[in-house]
Length: 264
Image (cartoon, rainbow, N blue to C red; front, side, top):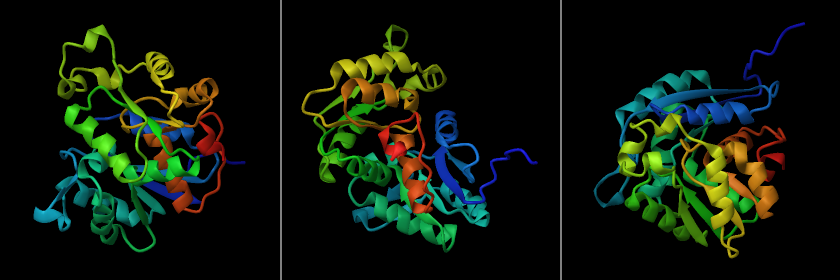
């Protein structure tokens, strides 16, 4: 009798993540059921968002060196699906960026590997659970430009937010500008209970669901509680990307404990 070794005999999934973040892999592994035959493989990126910069006139994108190197490392693994697990890149890239990024990455990852982005993942997840006007929740390190880009991104894709919240991380962090919060230690000091309370208190009646953006934003532990209390679906960036990659890999694996999206 052998023990589980997380070997991806059904599907190997890849994700490009921010180089210094611990949250994406932790949340993906938490939600991936043991023994499902699915393994996760990350490539880390240190480029500025969007990770694939638009060329002049938005006629295609340029790959950051980290992405080229990541593709070179991931391609031999014969992955079933890969996502650019970076909300900011999709939001700041805007309409058309997701498709341009996929067109640039897909040839480097090899035939048979499905490529997606966190923007497309969250759109697909919202539509799968019937959400049309989400309450958009954003991490505190998103500056005003990124917040505005997030609101515009979902509106431009037919999912106009009914309201939004940039999470308040508390007095200890309020004197730091958004761009210094992660380097100042907040990335590893995140608490989910205050986030849950703020979302529950601020969610407007007009919202038919919650979308928590930011793959480095710790939140999957509260999705079930939010759905129970708000009686509406709750989607998060990492939850949506895992769900979408599993679908692209043709893996049907109902997962409990992390929201109705994964249970379905």
